[in-house]
Length: 187
Length: 213
Image (tube, rainbow over all chains, first blue to last red; front, side, top):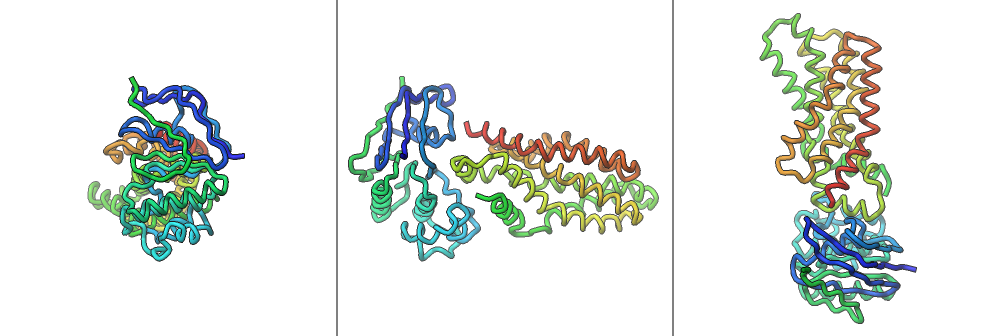
């Protein structure tokens, strides 16, 4: 069974406490929406969930592989999109590109893609990774209305298949019955 | 993700635009500076030629040091390796192999040209080539470890030189020493190179990990 759980997790960055005693548990098909103003620790929360950052207190339980969409797309800029993506997801690149509506740009170098197209490419990397736990940091940044709807659909399909999604955003994304994790400035 | 895929990716990035031409051109340019500086004394040039080739090789290995790890950290590639539970030491090792493949074989070919410039004997050239074959993996490993340490720093190129050059001195001493020192120096060169090749990926991994916090 897939699971992602925070037990009284605290985070201190640069000597400044961001959040403390954060606790939640997500299981098959669950989603959570992390909201809050800039600098409140949304990205840090996701990096802690991904295991990239050590929490200053508490424990994180991860049961399942992680698919992370961070600020950077992590695709080699000089390579054609399909090949850059295939480095991460292998043979699933074509299907993943089709899922985010970029299949016609498979032969275009990543560096000439627009901001929104790069965001979609990053999401294709997460979709193709086949990981049950998705961590999406501002997935709707730079996307048009179609793109936001596409993300909502991809998340719904992932949850229907038993996946977990943790989204940090300040933009409206429709996540039916998602847990809300509202971060407020600490102290 | 397989080791060969990591090596192929780094090698492709190193060879993109310019390819093997950069380290070779840089190496030959450095080697050419010495005759201008010390004058056209054939006997003197033949005597210092081997040492000059070693110093030039060291600088050629240092050349791409701010491009080995830093761009991958910035582009989020290292993060993606980490969430895939890929050992960062393995990533460091792959980078070492790719860096070595990118600069050492072209440089060993260019050393033949440099030997001509200094009028080195065939026997001396052979010793230089054997030394380079043994010593360059250590240089590549040192470059990757340095690159991990300075990743994310501003002006990383200059800091990288200050970090790497002193640590490369043993390779330089035993490498240049093996030209007329013989077997003993060669064994010490191999020992230093092996130590660096084995240890540097772990140093690079620890440095990258520390930089994430």
